[in-house]
Structures are given as C-alpha cells and as structure tokens.
Amino acid sequence: MVKEKIQKSIEEKTKIKISEKELPKKKGMSKGAKIGLGVGIGCCSLILIVIILGAIFGASTTQLKQTPKQEQQSEEARKAEEAKKAEEARKAEEEKRANLKATAEQMSYETLYRNIKENTGKSIYSQGEVIQIMQDSQPQMRVNITKSEYSFWQDTVLVVDLHPELHPKILEKDIINFWGTVTGETSYQSVLGATVSLPAINAEIIEIVK
Image (cartoon, rainbow, N blue to C red; front, top):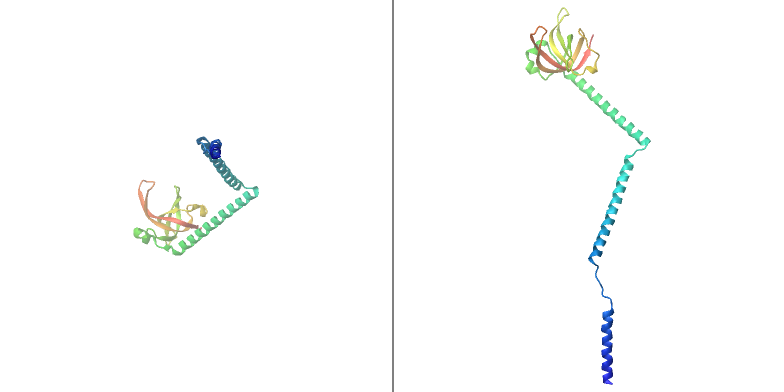
C-alpha cells in the first residue's frame, strides 16, 4: 500500500516536470523586430510631418493668391496710400516755404558781401534782375539785386535754382523775387579769363515779378 502511494507520487511529479518542459517559453522581441518597429515609427512620423508642412504651405499659397476683386481692392488701397503720402509731402513743402518767407532776412548787397562768413547759412530774401542764365547740373543764374536811382540793376549774386520745376521758365531780364540760404562766396572764370567772385545763394523759392 505504502509502496503504491510512493510510486503514484513519483509519477505525478514526473508528469508535472514534463508539463513544464512542454510549455512554450516566453521570448523577448528580437533585435530585427525592434529595428523594424523603429523604422516603421520613423516613417510614420516623417509622413505626418510632410502632411502638416503641405497643409501649411498650401494654406499660405491659397492666402497669397488673390481673386480679381481682391487684386482691385489692393490696387485701390495702394493708390490711396500713394495719394495720401503725396498730399502730406505737398503740405510739408508748403509749410516749409511759408516758414522760409516769414523768417528770411532782407539785406543789402554791401551787408551781404562784406559779412559773407557771418551771413553764410542765413535765410535771405531779395529781388533782382536776371542778367545771365547758366545751365549746370543745377540751374544757376546771375542776378543783380541793387536797383539804382535810374532804375538800373547792379551788384551781382549767383542764385542756384533748387526747384526749377516749381515755377515757369526764367529768362534773362526777368525781375524775380527769391528766398533761400546764403552758401558763402563762389568764384568762376569770365569769358575773358578773369576770376569773378560773388555771393552765392541756394534759392528754395523763386517767383517771377515781370
């Protein structure tokens, strides 16, 4: 009896061991599988990035492309902005001219030339007769600014016309009013080869009197 129990116990233990051997062992993921999984994830990420970038650039292209109506509105807005800037520039120029007229000093030829260094940079107003037009990179003219008791004009200054587009064409013997800035003394060669020195003025405003 005891012998049979011992035999039975041995057989049961043997069956358990055999059963354990027959059970499949859990295996970890192989190196190749891991690499494949990583590549798969990387490809998916790349595809997702491409899709997102495509959506962004597609939206940008759609926004940049305007309909004919939008193009017309943009052109009208551009023209309105240009007109606004032109009007602002015109008003600024008018204000500048008005200020120059209000502050310019009228002085005799003698005072102007005798103290040319002290007068350089000052705003000046004068009237005179144009005796010569000289074309250079900037239109220039010789103007006599002292009127004698016999109505003859004398005492010459050099006037540089900074804005010829703002007034009618000036001719010799025209009587003009001009406002500008004294730039100092200048010299030039006369027809006979002599050196002639005279005061120079950059005229911002010129008006033809007659």
